[in-house]
Amino acid sequence: MADRSVTTQTQTHAAVRLPRAERRAQIVEAAARAFLASGYEKTSMEDVARAAGVTRLIVYRIFDSKEALYLAVLTAVLDDMASEFELGPGAIAGERPTVAITLLGIARRHPDSFRLLWRHTSNQPEFQELFVLFRSAATDFASALIAEVSPDQMILQWAAESVVSHVYESICLWLDSGDVVADPQFLRMFGDGMRAMVTAWIEA
Image (cartoon, rainbow, N blue to C red; front, side, top):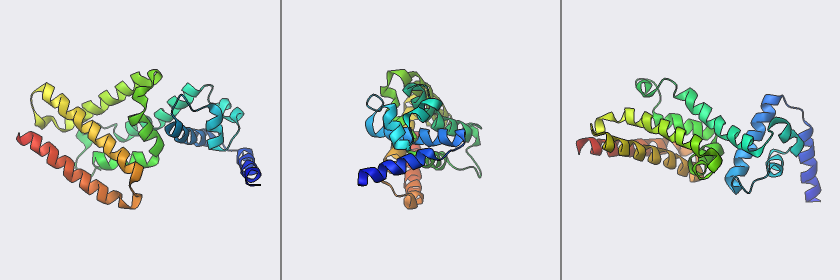
């Protein structure tokens, strides 16, 4: 009886005609959830369709392959980042939100895509180049923000890569277990820790 109810709900959900852009966004969000839960190799288009509450045919009407769908999942969060940081590190001043506030906002909008990008994409041969480009851009951004750490480019590169790893994994860990209502506390603690770490490097 329960199974029949779930099937009926899924069919009803699939029968609702959405504008193509809304349907695409719905499928991308469901795909991010499915890929994060089971991994790229073990997730089928049927799994994504089930997660989205639509038929596999609807998924294939919008995405012609699993690779294209995975890329769309990554592009959703990467495009959001590009939009938020388009002015470059020099704009992180005055009334503009800090990097941590901005990134947490992006992560809250795309929680599964954000974790998928940081934690899993580098392990997928099809998408390693994209991850390398993303991490390189993030490292360059961090390097410009903490340029005072050292005039030695080797030290600065290490420091920037360390900051990027700390920032993204800290946000992923908060997405895993942190309550959204406690986001301000997380941001205060995170900000205090980052400032202390970078200050210690500069003084050293």
